[in-house]
Length: 460
Image 1 (cartoon, rainbow, N blue to C red):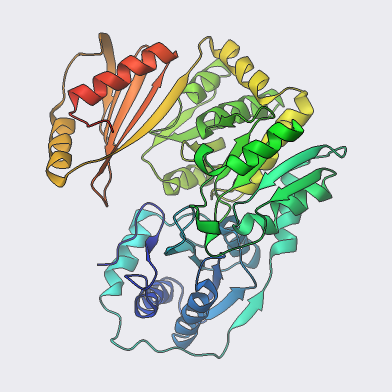
Image 2 (cartoon, rainbow, N blue to C red):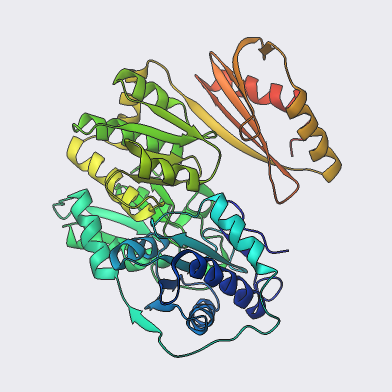
């Protein structure tokens, strides 16, 4: 059964992600658009640099054209945020984007971006899923009435207008991990006056054998280069919706720290607005907001929830610990290109290093927050036991600290004065994720060990 997960449908190429299944899902999306908007509704179709992306995009456009819709294929490998921007720019009713984001190269994916230019909400994907079974056994395609467009210039101008970044020939190292970010980030930096030293810029379907996720383990080349040149390093994932940042000493800064730095900086520049974060994301954002009288929104994991808050509420920054974020005035979709540029702007305009900016945040909120995430692969029976414990856990203390609150909106979140933990079973695989944030390394370690013991997780 084809299911839309946290951010679309993903599968292994030639296993479950096949031409026939792409036709069925495209037909289901077409039916949804027809029922919502009628004949001749305009639809964007785009793809990143993964295997068979161009072919899948052509098939999807053909299916939509045969159904009486007006598809426009975006030319060349395209970033997900660029595709979302194109929906808004061209006034389309939605977009079909082929990407598996940061997943390994054997994966392909498809996500539907509605008219509001952000991730589809569960009610929309639920309808599309229900239509898949209705698809005819032989889905028709057509080559007629398919148009082509390239929003690259407009998107880049839009990003430069938001960031307002000016360099003075400073060297910046960029590692786009053989993803589509190479079409955008190095160019924007150069046009803004920086000397962009770009590595892994060429778009490769195999991502040179790596998962295109900007994290410490995949950024060894970037880390080595920034240490050599003593400059900051920026990175994006396969479809450029996630960001990664390394300081001049080669230290990788997880998203939680970058989000805190960025929100603090935006407020210090005179901008106002609250912050929206997922249940798994740092509470440093809450403390920064509290100091300035701003509101905080917490959502389940998934940018689809944050995107809606960007649309409907006075949210200045929306972000998640997995490396996705966007700001007010932009599209309600993750944009790694934008976030990388904003972080660089914070460094350039303040004249401070990332370490100094983070220390300033710690001073401001009066504590040094540290966080970690652990993924446990467990037997199905063990996962079921964890779920049972999540539903039944009611203690008044955890790790010797009084429990302030317990939340079960998305897993089990236990909040104490010195730390919080989140236990979140995967909805699609036998994995349990543990998130911990604490006011200090020692406290973090104690809460992590307690969680492992209390919930019977196996550390390997």
